[in-house]
Length: 79
Image (cartoon, rainbow, N blue to C red; front, top):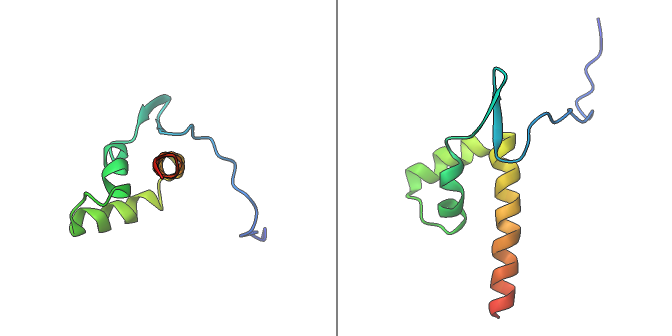
């Protein structure tokens, strides 16, 4: 039996903001929630649901990191 290495990095076949469905790439339907989540505009129920989603969706997770960095840059420029 082959031993599974939990620390081994998975090959990421996703492009930021896209999911592969069959042979077709499309945007994730939850992507529209990212900005509202980062700016605390989602209600508590939607916020919890989105948190559960983005931790399991490589596309949304990558987009969220990118947008959080952008928001931080803009906030630093304003100050």
